[in-house]
Length: 266
Image (tube, rainbow, N blue to C red; front, side):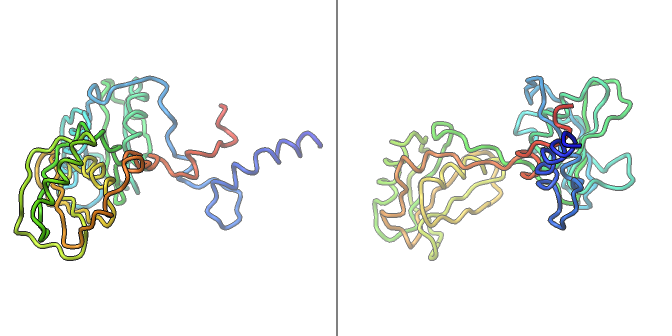
């Protein structure tokens, strides 16, 4: 009895960490279905995937396919989920008997993805988009991988040139320096970017305080750093703080990703 009591006591913290907060010692669905970490190193550019829309938003499969392609995944086909049935809440990754490690690797890119094995015999996988589908943000690239235009929407001439020199010193590639007739009265800096350039935009935004992020749906990864009407030299973040990359969220629920469960050793 004493040994059983100790065993129960050791497993209780893990169970509580995965509860819904209503004092029931039962793991949530998110915890039970959280995919494990892959045990093989598989490059994203070796993965071939179909992207199926079950979330009800028109065009979402094409949008997600584009984002996965930017990350290196080869997209075979897109469309509505041919399987039908009950759509996943977040996302589902379907794979064949030899594709589990591929599916686990891809699951690292998608928040709260569930895995489902089917009878396919090839190494392709299906990404099924649910209503609450979301990709894990890509960590921002190094400044040397980011190309920016520095544009002055401020009243003092020469500000763009000074800021361009600072960003160049910090390792950014500056493509264009000039003025813009656009008016931004409420912020010191406006970062304009397209969806593909969002990671680069986050790297640029780390350099400043009082930043507005503005997705203008441009193509490519080039970013505009626009100097707004509330610009002050104090808006520049010291280089030691500006180079710390922000943490990206885990592809699984944080309550599950960092907390061992009673079955984790199986």
